[in-house]
Image (cartoon, rainbow, N blue to C red; front, top):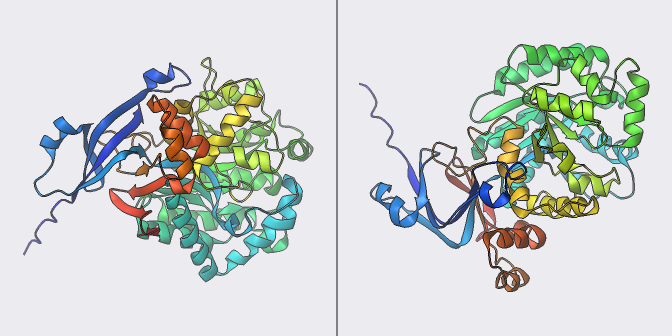
Length: 447
């Protein structure tokens, strides 16, 4: 007998929908914003089928569908974190160092523990729970050198149904013995992980050399060889975060024109490549990123915490050659997994550089901009029919102070600004991944 087809699963959300029709760095922010003050999002089998005014869209609601009532809240695409290290969660807020010393003193000893698969699984569960509490539904995640750290992460993400990008860190030099692989072993282990996870159950693999100083030219070339086998693979690494790091790269790779050129020679500068930080890059580097489709991850809380420098967001987004850019929390140098806090600090960094980061621009970076950085804008980052139903519900009155301030709001842009300046994980009322509610603030639990 042929088994009966599985009936479709329908759900719907009602509230104030906010999303984007374009890039607010390249067009007036007011024109880029799309909103529906009393809107309805209808979801079938994990994908959005209808979005629009409640009064009109309710006609498309399948009979018997429950409607989650979020009136008074904003319905947004889930946040996208384009640069974060899940193994560093236990060492967040480690005091007193800049990048290279911080790695030696805190990061490497912490990552050593991920040789234990059970420990990795415990931290993966905690990390993903925290992400969902912050409204983040997709992240580009660094694991450790240990393959079991990747298995632990993807196993938990698969259970939750979240769309994640992650990979095993490659390091074959300038790191402790207990964290080094070899060029060939790193290739072989990455190849096996790709075969096991990439493109399955919303999980995607990123070839992940930590940064140029911890990989030999041979390892970088083998990373490029992996990418050459499958254009759907991702690549993530670090770029020009710290002045001392940049000087070290120049010593290690004297034949390369720039830090970015080190990666380019190995075939790593390409679509679906995300370079964390990119603070100390020149115009030629930015033009190369624009032409190649390679993205930068702006990590404001991390850059401030380590004293690394100020990302030149408005230069990077110049209309002459805009570079794909998303926000990254960069835990554990970053100080919060909340992209509301990332937006908060990004605003201040822009102010110090003589620019005003409009709230529509900030929320675009955290959603659609992040999706474009990952070349996933066809699936996530926008509240629209045909998109995966990865959504977060933002409560602008989550705290007494926020409730007081929202009384003064005279526009949606002002409401977004209060959220990015006063909000944090408490401002997330619920999070949905693939149409399933995976976090609910009412009981502070994930699925």
